[in-house]
Length: 424
Image (cartoon, rainbow, N blue to C red; front, side, top):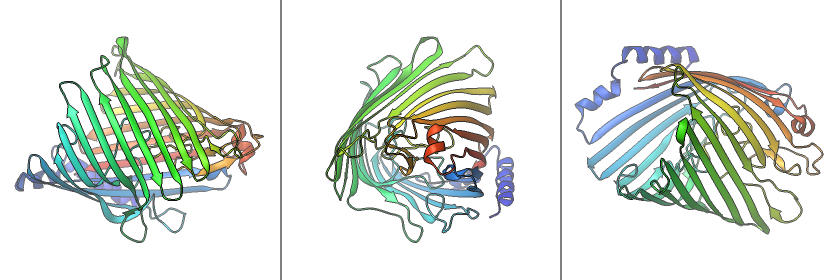
C-alpha cells in the first residue's frame, strides 16, 4: 500500500473514531470471554551514510499490522494469539526480509494459567514476548518492524504484601523466516531467573537476576546481574544496572561485564513539567584478540532502540557512552526530546558493534584510536487522540577518529523518520 494512502486511511480512522474504536464496538457484541484488538503503524524513514560510506543512502516505507484475539473462558485461564504482517516494499536491499519485513505469521500464541502481569502466580507457555527490567538485555523492541518473541515456558510468583516477585523461564528465541513459518532454533537456549524486591528501598525497587545462555557448538555462559531504580527527593530519579558474564565459547574463556547509570530530574513547577537526565553506559571489549579470553560483552536480546543513540548504529558492546537529554512537553499531547551523545570504544583493539551484534569496523592493532563520534538527536510525538499518534525525528552521528580511520570513508550518518500509529 502506498504511504500516502496508508496515511490517509489511518488519519480518517483516527478522526472518525476519536471517542471509540471499531474493534471496541465489535467486542461489545461478543461474549466477554472473547475479545479482539488491532494496531497499525506506518513509518517513512531513510539514511545517508550507511555503513559510514559516502554513497550508501536509502529512503523507504515500513508498514506493520498486528491483530490480537484473546479467549478467556474463566478468570484464571487465557489463550492469547497475535498475528503480524510487516512489509518494506521500497527498500533498496534485496531480497526483502527480516528484520524489516516478515509477511503474515503468528507472533504470539500462548496459554496462560493465572495472571502473569498482576496475579500471585501464573504459568505461561507457548510463543510470547519476554521483557524484563528496562529491556537492556531482554526485550521485545517496539521500534522494530518485526519485534522479537520466544517459544518459552514462564513461571511467575508474586507476593504483593511483602513486595516480592520472581520469574523463571526457559526458551529459545524465534527466528524470523522470509520463506516460511517462523520457528525457534533447537539447541540455542536461554534460561533465567528474574527477581523483584519492591519494598526494600523506599520509592524504589531492586531486581537481581541470573541468565544462562547455552548453544550447541560450544557457547555456554552465565549472566548474573542486578538493576535498581526509583525516586529521590526534590524530583530526582535514578537507575543503575551491573552485569557480569562468565563461561566459555568453544576453546575460549568468556569474561565480560557491563554497567549502566542514570540520573534525572523533573521540574514540577515549570510549564509542562520538563524532565532532564544524563546517563552513562559501558560494556567491556576484548583487550587481546590472541589470548583465548573473550572480553567482549554479549548484549543478549535487548530492545536496543535509542540505547546508544537514536540512530541505532551502535550496540551495547565494547563501548563507553554518555548521554544527556530532556523531555519537554509544551502541551499534554506533545513531547519533544532533544539529546546529545558521545561514544568511545572500551578497547581500541576490539571492534565497533551494531545493535544486531554485527561488527561494524575493527583495527586489531588499536591504531584507529577509541573515539567513535558524537550524535545529535531530536524527536517528537503528538498524541492526536487515544487512537492516533504522530511521531517524527532526526538523528545525526558525526564520525570521530575511529570511524574515519577504520571504515572506508568515515562518513557521517544521518537518519530522518516520520510515523503514524493507530489502534482500532
